[in-house]
Length: 430
Image 1: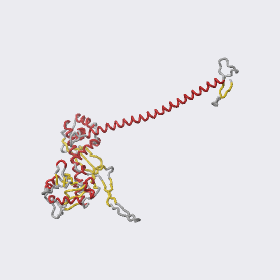
Image 2: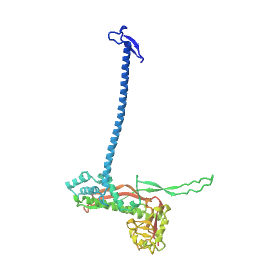
Image 3: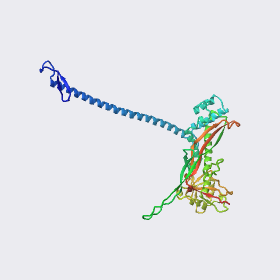
Image 4: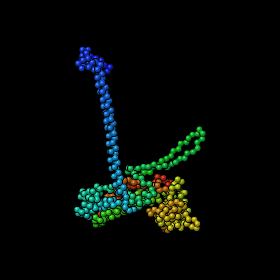
C-alpha cells in the first residue's frame, strides 16, 4: 500500500501492486477515479436528503396551517348552530307574541313557584319542569337558579318595543356600569373673521354631563294555581305579553310625562312634558287658555320655532290619539293643514304626527300649566337600560289567595342629550 493525494485534499491508501498491472488489481489512477465517483455519489445523496428534509418541513407547516383551518371551521360551525338556535327562538309565530319555547319556559317558572309554594304537587309536574327547564324541580330553589335565557329575554324586550313608544322614538342606550356620565355640549362659541396678522381669539366650548343612574321598575303577575300541561304555553304567552305591556307603560310614563318625583311609576328624572318647561322650551298659550281644547293652529305651529334649527328637518309632533278630532277641526275653508293620510300616518303642515297613548288626552276641562303636545326629534332623549328584563318567581306573595306570582323587573332611566331638541305646548297658568 502506498499513500497518494487527491484533488479533494484528502489522503487515500492505494494498493501497492509493485508497479505492475496484472493480478486484477487497480492501479493508482483507477483507484483515484473510483474514490472520486463514490464521493460524488455521497454528495448527491446528501443533496437529495436535504431536499427531502426541506419538503418534510414545508409539509409540516402546511399540516399545522390545515389544522388551524379545521379548528376555525369547527368554531364557526358551532357559532352558526348557536346563531340558528337564537334566530329560531326569536321568530315569534304571531305578531305580539313570543315563541312557544319562550312561553313554555315562562310557564315552567310558574310551575316551579307552584311546586315550592305547595299549590302544585306530583311526579307529573316534576317531570314537566325537568322537560321544560332542564332541571329537577326538587332541587330548583328559586328562579334565580334558572334565569331567563338571553334569547328569551330578547323576545320579551322586543314585545316591550312593540307595545311602547319610548323605544320606538327614543334612543335605547345600554349602560355598562351602575352610573354612566355622557357629555353634552352646553356652550358653543362661534368662529369669526380674523384680520390679517390679527390675534386668533380663543373659543372655549363648554361640556356638561348627563348622569344616567338606572332605577328599578316592575311588578308581580298573579296566576291561578290550577295549572295543567295544556295551559303552560298559554300561561307563558300571557306572562310575556302582560309583563311587556306593563314595562312598556312604565317606560313611556317616565319618558314622556314623568314628574321626577321618585315614587310610584315615576323615576327621579323628569319626562319630556316636564323637562321642556325646565329647559324653557315651551310656548304657553294666552291667559285664560287653560284647556287643551283651547289650542289653536297658530299655537301648534309656534312650538316649531322653539326648537333648535337643526331639529326642524327631523322633527315630528307627539300627541295623544284623542286629539285627532280636534286637529280635523283646524281645517277651515281651503286651508287643510291636517291630513290623516291613512296608513301612511297623520301630518300637520307636512310634519308627521306620532300618536302616543301616554300623552295627556284631549280635554275640555281646565289643566293649568300642563304641556300636552310636543314637537322635535326624540332620538335625543335616551332610554338607558341596565341589563335586560328579569323574571323571578315567588312562593309567598300569593299564599293567602292560593296564587302563583311571577315578578318582572327592569332597570332603566332617561336623559335628554340636547335641551333644544324638543319643545312643548303648555296651557296658561290661569
